[in-house]
Amino acid sequence: MHSLNHKPLALRLWRYQTERFPLLALVPTTLAVLYSTWAVLQPIGVAEPLWKYAALGVAGISFLLHTRIIDELRDRDVDDLHHPDRPLQRGLVTERELTRLGFANGGIFITLHAVLDPLSGLLSAGLLAYSLAARYEVGPLKWLKPRFYLYNVVMLAQMLFLQWIAYAALTQSLDWTPSIWWHGMSIWALSAQIEIARKCLAPEEETAYRDSYSSRLGTRGSALLTFSVTAVAVWTMWHASLEPYPWAAAASLAVVGAGATAYSLKPILSRRKLLQASAVLAYLLTNLIP
Image 1 (cartoon, helix red, strand yellow):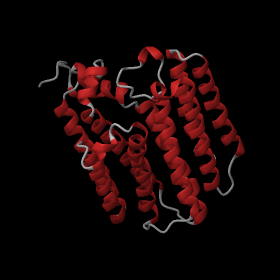
Image 2 (cartoon, rainbow, N blue to C red):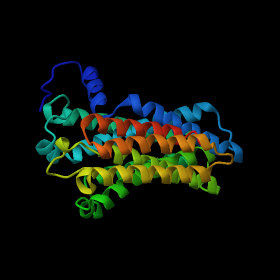
Image 3 (tube, rainbow, N blue to C red):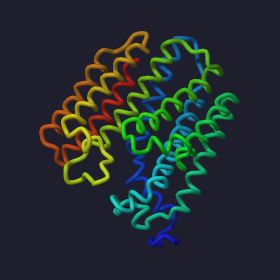
Image 4 (cartoon, rainbow, N blue to C red):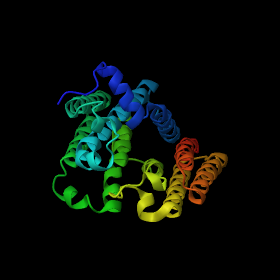
């Protein structure tokens, strides 16, 4: 099937990213994670050059785009029915174009890690294989699919593995201090916080498929969950830090608390966007704690 949109591919992919892979939010959040990683590793004597952090940033964004495309292709039948306005469904891009882009980004991800360190290259290949297994719902992943909460936890584990691979690239080992393990848990919690906030919807946006936290927990329950997971991220980041900044921790909780309260009191579209914006800001602030 050819794309129904005859504009150049580059322009169509740019439109695709604005809708489904917002670089405007992903670039600063990736930089924030790189900063907190550097801040945690420096005190324990890991002083790698900045170009390695830059390479990890490119690799990380490449993997995130790869997983976004995996999700698009895996859930196409569901989205055809419940989300017909999305780019793939309305013909802005084709399945073939997305598949090629996904494999290209997977290749960038593995290549950069292999250049940084053979161990991290090997681990990145394993993570890529896991993401492909998720694409085709191999083995227990098919059993997990209808189990909403467990399935989301397992899928988000990819973000924890991604962070572990970054540590392997920078330390050239898997023998890490407690601060590194605490930091990884914080990044995992922050990834969950963003995902939960993204799936806190206004009532008019809900679908019969119930693929949001708000459809399962209600607006107040999903808002509370967003705040609670942020609190876990702040707590674990605090433990990862040698000299944590209290102002960053307090600001993170205050910001997401305000967004969650506003959304829970009046779950309209503008308040939903406010909650998501507050989650991104809290993500940035939490990474400033170390």
